[in-house]
Image (cartoon, each protein chain N blue to C red):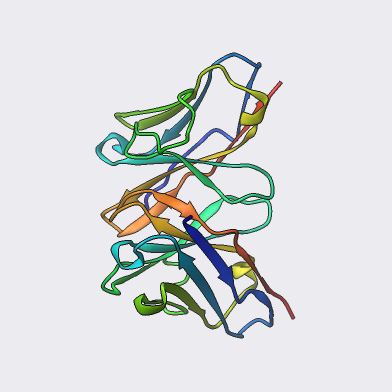
Length: 118
Length: 108
């Protein structure tokens, strides 16, 4: 069974940092783009970042320069290092598997909540 | 930046057809996909590459994409189809994935 399990969310003060992890299983991790998508409470989905199998990252403009995506293929894991956090970053963060390059996100994790507040 | 526009809400009677539109500049030149999200749950992929259904997605969900508009059609809508629906496309000019604003489907 294909599974994505996020962890690392929590409460952090503005300007602080947090590292999210996404543990995957049930598929050949190295063959897929992996993505981070966030959703503020009551709002829509917002793409955050993508990393290809070779480690080439892409970022939304709202997080570029503050967030860093990485992957550890040997551990089938995806990460999101979030620095200089702002209130506007408060959201549920989902990791998702890319069906293929530049294609839909076919498997999603359950999400982890990040709250940025004093 | 590239934007995808969806109607905030669509209402449909059980057994009828619901159509959800997603508009963007020359969207027909891009692949569009659709997701369903029920309250408290993660999104589920319904349609990819404009018209294709992943394994396990009911045939009543179908997609099309032409010109500036992609459409998700739910035929024979059921109460269980009440959810939020999001379109998504890849914008090569900005190297960004873009989600639509989302449409809440209510089955009355």
